[in-house]
Image (cartoon, rainbow, N blue to C red; front, side, top):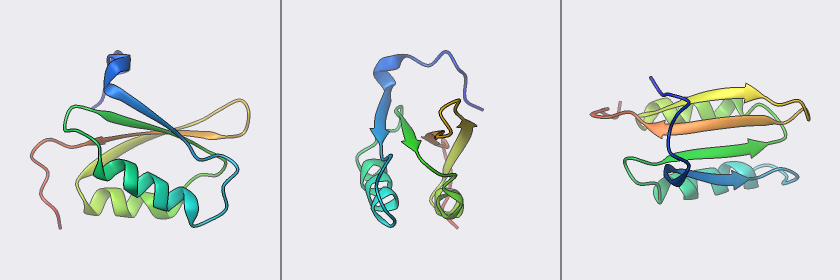
Length: 86
C-alpha cells in the first residue's frame, strides 16, 4: 500500500492531457520503462485510463486513481515489490 507522504524526489510527473489515443498510453508505458524501483509515476490525464489498469496488473504495478476538480484524473503508479508477472 502506498503512502501519501512519499518524497517528491521519488515521483515523476507525466502530463498527457490533450493527447489523442493511443499517445497517452504510449507515453505512460515509455515512462514506466524508465521508472526506478523506488520511484512513482504521477500521470495527469483527461480521462479515466481503464485499459491501462489491466496492463499495470499484468506487469506488477499498482495504482491509485484520483479524480481532480478540473475533471482530469491523477493516476499514481508504482512497482509492487517482489511482484511476479503473470
